[in-house]
Length: 200
View 1 (tube, rainbow, N blue to C red):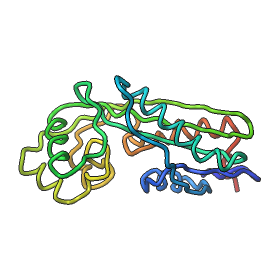
View 2 (cartoon, rainbow, N blue to C red):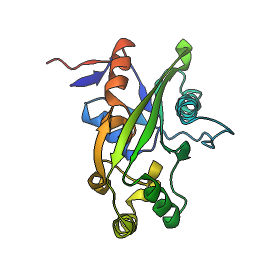
View 3 (cartoon, helix red, strand yellow):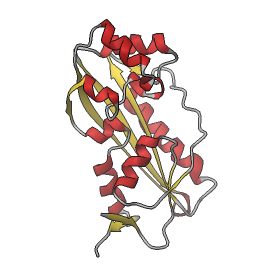
């Protein structure tokens, strides 16, 4: 449906297979270069401030080596009761996170940054989705953690994987919860003329 504009180089500064699948699914040609920037949260940093900062930092990190390219950075985190839930440290941490989330709603803050160093251009958007998780119970939490799926996911679940069965409803962008607000990103890339509609 979309294609990268002629003579345009687009880089996704993320090793996330979920973000890659979202971009590939709409036909965009791009390269993948994982960012090596420090993702440690700052003291007293809010979730929205953190994802905004990290999305831009990831894009800037790659753009320094590829100034003529358009670079997309992204970051996603889960928030409940004011606590930012990143990726779990171990199985016990995953159980703790899921126990906090089950049977209630939480927020997923996601951001994408677009950087083109040669044009001195930097843009960033932050979006928040509200996710309602079913009441799982201890056995279901343990069984899900045992699958291994939660271990590299913010908030210890994957809405597009086995974890889809944990979710009752989503208010806001579903793809934002997956890792990238695709509709908002496409709108921004079209406006910047980085991509265009693929018309036969």
